[in-house]
Structures are given as C-alpha cells and as structure tokens.
Length: 517
Image (cartoon, rainbow, N blue to C red; front, top):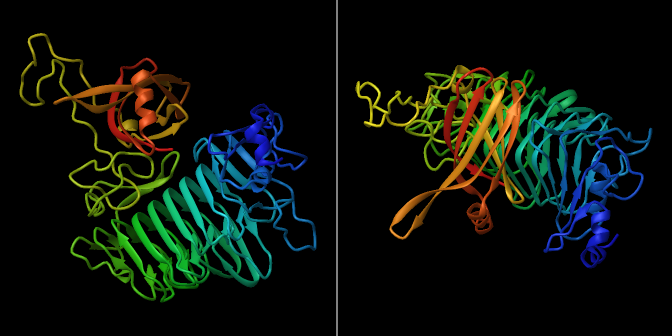
C-alpha cells in the first residue's frame, strides 16, 4: 500500500483502518490485542505488529492508536537463529518515525510474552510513546543484551509522555547487560510524566537498571516529572547509568529505592562522562556498596533533596538520607508523594511544570514540591451561608452560596486528574474513591475589552460503579470548539469536579489543569 493511494482514495484508506490527515501522515488503529502478522492492517483486523508494519512502510511520521487492554507479543524468535529486525517475530522493530498512543498508562499495555524486548528502534527512526505501559521484556542474546523494555538505536528522538516502563529483564551471560528498562543510544531522550520501575538484571554483568544513556554525536536527555525506582543491577547505576557523554537535565525527578547489591552508585552513575544538571529533584535511599551517586558529581541547580554524594550543595538543597516519602501509588502514573514534614515540600526552585506526573496542579503550597509528585493540599471549606471561616458571619442576606465540604480522606489524600486533548473533546481520567457519580466542568478566563470573563469550555458527567479509574469526556460548545481550534499546544483550564458518592453528599474539588495531546 503506497501513500498516494491513501491520499487520493480516502475510501480505500477508511477500509484499511487508517485515517488520512491533511498533512498526509496516517493513523493506524489497532483492532485486536493478540499478536499476528497475517496481512495488512485493516479496519476489521489490525494487530499492533501489523500496525507497526504499516507505519514502517510509509515516509511521513504516522500514529498508531492502541485500545484499552493488553496488546501481547507472542510470536517467538525462531530457535538457534539471531533475532531479526524486520518486525516478523519477537520484539516490535520500528524503522520509521511513528507515535504509539494508548488510552492511558493504566489502561493500555504493550507486553512481551516471549524472550525478547518489547520495542526496538532501528537507526534513523524516532519513536514517541504516549499514555501506555511497556512491560514484560526478557532479553538474552548472549552478545547483545541491551534494552529490556526499549532499545533505541535510532540516534534520533525518543519521546515518552505519561508512560510506565516496568517489569523488564536482561540476561547477559556472555556480555554486559545494559539498560534493563531503557537503553538509549544517541539522539535526544525526552521523558515527561513517566515512571520507570522494577526492571532487573538477572545474569551476567548488569549496568543501568532503569535507564542506560550513551551513544555518539552530541546526545541529550531531558527528564521532567519522572520517577525511577525498584530497578536492580549487580554493578553500577541501578537508576541511571551513562556509558558516554550525554548532556542531561533532571527536573522534578525522583530516584529512590533502586539497588546495586554488588556494585556502586545505585542512584546515578555518570562514569566520569558528560554533564548532568539536577533541579528540584530527589535522589536518596538507593542501596549499593557505596553511595547514591558516583564518579563525577552532578551539577546542582538547586531545590534538591538527597545524598551528599550527588553534589547537592546549593543553598536551596537539603542533604539527607530520609526524603520523607510515602509508598509508591497513583493512577495512571505511580509516584512517591511527600509526607507531611518532608524536606521535599515547597523545596523546588525556578519554574516548575503546571502539574505533577499524575496531573495534580503545581504548586499546592507557597512553592512547588521537589520530585515528581506534588502533595495535594485540601481546599479550605466555605461555611454554610458563605461566611469566612472563623468569622461567625452568615454571609450575604440571601444566605450565600452552597457549602463546599472538605473532601473525604480518599480525595484529600490526592485528587488527581489526567487531562488529554483527543480530537475535538477533552478526556479527563480520574480515580474514583468509591461508587458514585462525577460531574465535571472546565472553564477558562478570557478578556473582553477591559473585563475578564470566565467562559465554560465544556462539561460532562459519568457514574462509577466502584472505586477505580473513571474517564469523563467533556464535549465543548461553540465557544469551546473555537478555543480548541485556536490552541495548537497545551490548553490551560480550571477543572471543577463534583463527586457524589452513592448515598452521600457531593464533594467539590477545583484544580488548575493543563490539557495535553
């Protein structure tokens, strides 16, 4: 199938399960979660492998859309043969620029069930992953045990947004095992709102449990709102390991709980190469024979919490082995939220992201918290009658507005909403504390002459049968549609979320949020 056929014959494109945007790039929609390569990607029959095949056969950067569920890789590599790079079996081989978008990291997973990694990016290609989980890679190639979850040889861009990389394994009996979670060679790594957790070396010499960075040229890495935890290697860099100079910025990053039981530098090991700038981050409580960080020290840009071995000596830094974090939790992106009294609270310096890795608005206090998670602050209740708390007043003669109760513990512990732009609507993913009903309204502020007005972008409602993830679609009116057309990037909104538990009273939470593609 050639690209001119898709552009000239839209009906044929529709029958093949793809959309044909004006720019000529295609969208391939996965219709079955099982593995297979029995023909073209069509509207009736398109596995993820077939969608990658289709994208590899085009020139422009296409998009692959994953449904809710686990897309499994089950086509095993042929015995006694070297792994191939043609996407026939084993891992998914990406040879052209492509974006793979899921329905949320807690909703869409790509999981390998054979002995191979999950994704392999071939030289020259760029890969963008959004709103999904990568899991189950198991690599043992003897002489090339690289990248248990993702191995990027592209030398171009690897972009991860709202992604979890977890439970991948490297076995390097005959050679070093490099990058159990991700191995990125050259180019530019951009990771935003990402968790890399529980990736492990199990044989041979292991380096870079969560992330291995290196490559030729002038590689770069920019990590924002990223958590790296639970990763294990026997030697160095259980969190992050470098094997060549990579200009790196770590902003609002949490690196805790990684382990290098027989090696050194369980948090970050620079191997005396490159420059690593760290700001408003947490690197502590990693386990190794020596320190959290090693080799050449990191460059602190302030607002950090953690080990002295990491070079945290700026005035706004706090050196401690006890960062004061709660257990890892959160949906769709798991994070370590600072506990009350944590040195990470209000510690950040400089500009901080609009939200944390879960979408909780920053800041919640006088300043942003260090690390990938912001500790939510319960809104101040408005007494019945609308008076000021503690004033004893009753508000306006008409009795004021309705009472806004303090959220129950389940919401007070961390209301979070992931807000995504999809086509002409806004999709909000929330965590329901119990059975009940969500009613949402999104507004924005706009100037009209000398006045500023609050305009409703859109509204939506949905019932939750039980505690868990709930998705609410906000459909805009005429004004909201115009606003969406004018905004090409992120859209800043005020989200008013009312949750009415079954048999209970409504709880209202208002947050500033950013809708992202």
